[in-house]
Amino acid sequence: MKFRSLLLGALGAVVCVTGVAVSKAAYSAEQFIPMLVYRTGPYAPSGIPVANGFRDYYTLVNKRDGGINGVKIVFEECETKYNTKQGVECYEKLKNKGPTGASLVNPYSTGITYQLIPKSAVDGVPILSMGYGRTSAADGRVFKWVFNFPATYWSQASAFVKYVGRQEGGMANLKGKKIVHLYHNSAYGKEANPTLETLAKKYGFKLTLIAVDHPGQEQKAQWLQIRRKKPHWIFMSGWGVMNQVAIKEAAGINYPMDHFVGNWWSGSDADVVPAGAGSKGYKSATFHGAGAGWGVHEDIVKHIYGGDAAKAQENKMGEVLYNRGMVNAMFGVEAIRTAMKKYGNKSMTGAQVRWGLENLNVNEARLSELGMKGFTQPVKVSCSDHETSGPVMFQQWDGSKWSFASIWVPPMRDVVRPMIEKDAANYAKENKITPRKC
Image 1 (cartoon, rainbow, N blue to C red):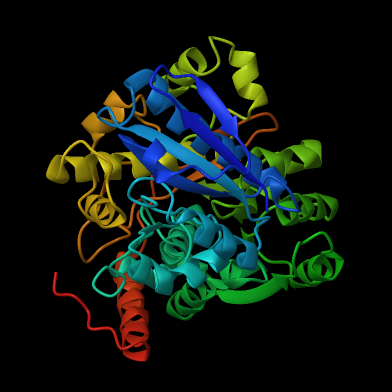
Image 2: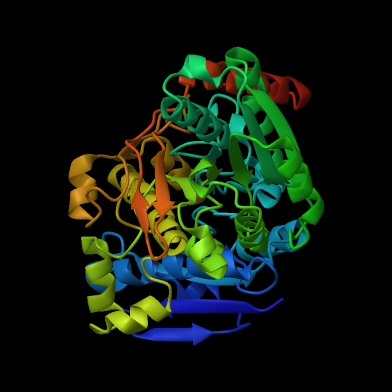
């Protein structure tokens, strides 16, 4: 397994270290954050911009701000290739690094997240699975160490159905409509199915579930089935090469692209560019902006790339998944900052960062200070609610860029939250967990 470390010293110099164990004595006022990445393999087109977004934001905080309240961020990449076994190995190798161990872990894989959930409480390392992972982990009474804000797969699926209802002129008009869920045949891809099945019964639409096996390069049979079904809408939970293949296949059968909606892992630049003009009109969910038009991007160009915007763009700055990695890193940094308000400006332990995550409150004023006003929505986490049920935006590809194509759509919390609590209660019973009182 190859490792890539990036240590930022007191003068802001960048030193890359590969495969070198760093002793705990080398860390004084530093905060270690492991980075599970996939820059290689079939999911690299999705993994690279995410990893770059994390890297650049952590580097920005160090160079522009001198760290988090004077505590430098130290991070190290470990290549998972989006493989669950390799991801768990990466976690085990990195969890004890730094003066206080790993601050938190961002698995960036639902499969890896599922495997780490039982380990997190034992190891004292909180999991931030931002918008992915086990949906019922939103119930903080049962899943004390797991956070999946700003919204879960179930909330996202409910927002999609609400969005379709609005496009059809009202929720009552969903009755009899045919909707296909084209999903990656993995724990991740299946997550939305229970919500979609529940909502199909509630609103009377005809749901067809169609799986695509890893990695998703072969989809001829699935699209023949879709062609026969003639669905009014398609919702896709894909990842990596699966997305671009699906969009090409949809264009090939002249499916109306403005009725083909990906989830927020199926709406990146790498998904639509390969299909060329055929992808024009395709939509996807999101919870942040696309492009590089925010103040935080200006700061990245200035402090990391020496004013060279072209170089920043070569590193995927402004692409959807780069921005997602960046906003994910921001939430982690702000959780550490929140913890410091209680425990002091020093290296935080995983347990202290867990408290910071549970008391995180990134409001409009703070987003403005971070150069992210209008870029994403505020987040306020609580003991019982580790999701926050943030609203979902739908964006559309015009052939050259993504633009917002809806207002912010609130999830159907009245439907989703009871499902979350029921699943969490079952997990607690199976694992002999006594839920906390919040």
